[in-house]
Picture 1 (cartoon, protein in one colour):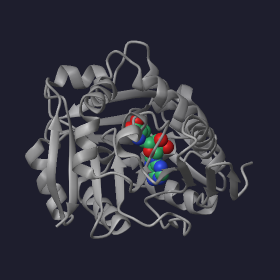
Picture 2 (cartoon, protein in one colour):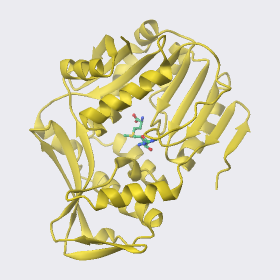
Picture 3 (cartoon, helix red, strand yellow):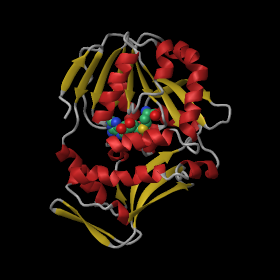
Length: 324
Ligand SMILES: C[S@@+](CC[C@H](N)C(=O)[O-])C[C@H]1O[C@@H](n2cnc3c(N)ncnc32)[C@H](O)[C@@H]1O
C-alpha cells in the first residue's frame, strides 16, 4: 500500500486517491442505467495500465506511433509556441512516455504527472526522477474528474497542461467542454494547453485499431471486470462477456462494449445486477474530430486554438490552446 505522501530525491508522490465508497456509488449508477455504462477510468488497475502500454505498441494502433513521430518532428517548435521553463501538468499521464520527447525542449521547472493508477504512477515517477535528476517530479494520484489538490510547493510561473493520446476523445463533447473548462482553471490566464486529438479517417483503419489481431484490446476491455470486482465486492466473470468495438458513424466515435453472452445475475455486494443475453456494458467511447470541430469544442470551453500540427498522413492532430 502506497503511503499518502512521500518524497524521494527529486520525486514527490502525493496519493489523493478517491475512496472506494465514491467508486461504488458511481459504478452502480452506471450499471443501473438502461444502457449499462462503465467510466473508462475503471480500466486502469495495474494490469489495465500494462495492457494499455501493450496497445500503444500494436501495429494496428496508429495513434501512439503517429503522435510520437509528431513529437520527434515538432518538439523544438512546440517549445517555441508553448514557452519554456513553466510547470508542466499531465492529467492521465500513464507511462509518461510521450512527455519525454518534450522535456529537453520545454525544460519545465516541474513536471506534474496526474493519474488514477497508483502503483503504475509511482513506478513511472521514480523512473523519471532517476532519468532526469534536474527535474522536480510532483506525481499526484487522483481522479481528475473529481476534486484534487494542486501541490502548494509547485514553483511559480506559467502552467502548461499536456493532454496527449486523444484521451479527451473518451468524453462526450459536453463533458469534454466541462473538462477543458476545469483545465483552464488549473492553468490560469497566462497558461496554455497542449492537447493530442485523433482525427476522422477511414472506418477500416479505425476498426482495426480497436480490434487488433492479438486480442490485446479485447483483454484490456475484459480486464475492466477484474478491475471493478474488488471495488464492488462483485463476482463478474469475464468468461460471460465478449469484446465488441465498432465505429458509430452518426456520433463520430468508436464505441467499446462488453457483451453479455447469457442471461445471468452478477452480485455486487448486497446488490444484484441482471444481464440479458446480448445486453452490453458501454465501456469506452473514442470521439474523432476534425481540426475545425475540435477548435469549435475548445471555443465552447473559452479556449482559443493558437497553433496546431497535423501529421503528414492526416491521422492525428496536436493543438496549443490558450484562455480566450
Ligand atoms: C488512454 S491512456 C493515455 C496515457 C498517456 N497520456 C498517453 O497518451 O499515452 C489514459 C490514462 O489516463 C488515466 N486516467 C483515465 N481516467 C482518469 C481519471 N479520471 N483520473 C486520473 N487518471 C485517469 C489512465 O490511468 C491512463 O493512464
